[in-house]
Image 1 (tube, rainbow over the protein chains, first blue to last red):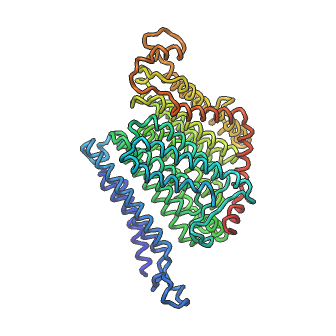
Image 2 (cartoon, chains in turn red, yellow):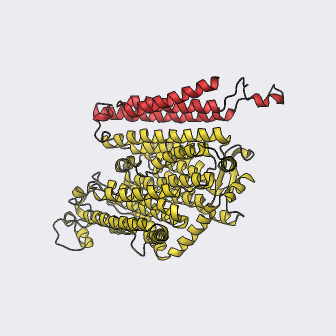
Image 3 (cartoon, rainbow over the protein chains, first blue to last red):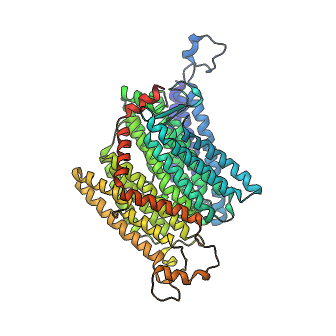
Length: 117
Length: 502
């Protein structure tokens, strides 16, 4: 049952993120929207590897019949990588937004010359 | 071990060493960057012989010696090797020219340049879908940073625009990869190809749509091209040369790899429609530009349209044109960057009144690039465009007409740009009418700024001109190589077997 909830949550998150990205004019809000969108995808990835009553995928103190009960570790590794990438993109975006604020004294994308076209 | 794989660690190490070198010994910075790109170029050349001698013309390597479907696979076939050679070659030439173009040898510039090249080279090497995404992100992040390099109004604006669109596109690719993993339970490209073939599912069109949308934005296919003119206008021009040539070629490579090798579908109608629209709209918009960099950006967009059309009809001509366009765009952008070495002005109307005092080689290089871009015989652009005309004429004569029309438009705006940059009244200042050479001799002492000549400019431009002429005159050689590459792409079983039977 948890898997259904997490899939629904993933869909809601991606929809929210897309909305914020498209509808908000504030650049910071756009970046937040981007983060929410990507996190929705992360949740989807995690749900793909999820198993009901699964155990941690570490082969040490278990017998091999339990192998099938392990959750899939690969999506978790992918999500970790993706989170790091998202972090660096957010950091870079914030640096650029600071520069924009210095030059234009605004972070509203409608007031930037070329972005409104 | 694949020799060309060495390029990735070398470029990454250079990217981290360059800022360290920049603290005390600034003059070492460009030399380090040029050495790293030169080493990676030589490494990719050294891969040609082992690749052609191997049994099925594919070299594979497992990272960390995991068994095949697990771990990260490095697999290169002839198409990958062509792209890798082009990336490292244009990267080398751009690094050489940057030595002259970038004043005070800024370490962050060269560091990001090496990071960008490492990302692109990685994209062409990998045989793993998620690894492709990671390298694409390395490329993207360094691209966003390089776009904002001058921290002026227009570069910050272009950068945030590119960042928001690009990050959304890469998120779509990640979503596609997540669905692929959910469907097939593997990320190895060859393994996915087998799983998809055995078990066709209604999710596959969605996955293809997501992956294609993301990569189409990255390679600036109309209607997802809006970022490209702004970005190319704002970056340092040698970087623009890489964006217009190597980055676009690599993203097209990724599209072809996903469509042909993984899903084994060709999407003829979609490619034809998108290609025709891209080609025409790019050329029409280029006609209206006054800014030389925006003009070249739209020109680059319109050339991508040709490649898409060619992929829908005949892969040989597509690969040949992809090669030629990469060389031509690099030549055009590098000659413009050599011309504008002392000024940040890029509007052609203003430039035509300025005394730019170019060295003789620069107008020649721009003219060769412009004519080749338009498809004038004896230059490489013609050899591949002729193939495209012939192959489309059999099946889609209307598209041939559109392609010829676009070539005519290309010739018109390229010659307009040439005339305004090099032959206008302003260049004669005080001299009567005469050839460009005599005008320029009178004005040499006029300019106290850095002269735009020297090996850093001559080497890249002359090499590119020679390649343009070579593949224009000996077109059948290029055709022969492209035909071999096209054959290797036509059957994805060879790739799958070579990767899985390692």
